[in-house]
Figure (cartoon, rainbow, N blue to C red):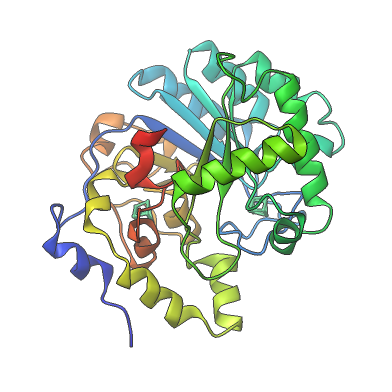
Length: 326
Ligand code: SF4
Ligand code: SF4
């Protein structure tokens, strides 16, 4: 049975039309180049992708931050964001403006040529590291992210700990990201965080701040996996069955704008991957950036939005209903 269109589903909620609230975060996707090829990747990233941000676009992002002090956070993602030649420039400029910078890091990037000093660079600029680790078991991680990824990830986390990341009062935040290996919803974020903390501490001496559970979005490479395994309809129905109207006011698209590698603006990274450009009452390119207008826009929605609204909800900062636990 097909799912109810998402725009119909939210009609009975407190926000029948999804509207932005403010713009306090600029999430920048610098391109699709990555040293990994993960099965669930919603970006379809990999080592052969050539899409990458130019210096002109990076400068426009820095200008947008300069003109809009209400944007407190620059959240840099990819691909592997650190492979973009503009990564260091944006980090330096945003940190100099005292904005919080987030690096969505796959951890194995530390072992790529020329990246030996990356952890020290992140520490120097107080960059918050949000690192993918879909399990504390080697088999599960490598099933999703590829052979050799687990040992490198563990050693990268230990290295970050040695630099002060993830330890109390260092001010250097290290968060981990969990997403389900298959077509299921994430378990309770708080419970899983407790498991991660004890397992990683006991087995590897690793400390971290918070665990974010993220629902796999039914788009891109994960959509292809669902199609190939005949699970797409069942997964969409599962998401709709668990639709939680209480998540709607807290969706991340209400407080952020997503920027593509070529400068186009989107409501979120998922819309970006679906090529759903922002077009409800806001500028659509970084060259025309205006946070005031963008804060009044209507958000573009589709059935993939069930991924953000199922169960405890999902966002780039984890379960939306459990944020207060952080
Ligand atoms: S999920 Fe992250 S690390 Fe994996 S291929 Fe995609 S961008 Fe790269
Ligand atoms: S996918 Fe999620 S973040 Fe993006 S527009 Fe839909 S609800 Fe908002």
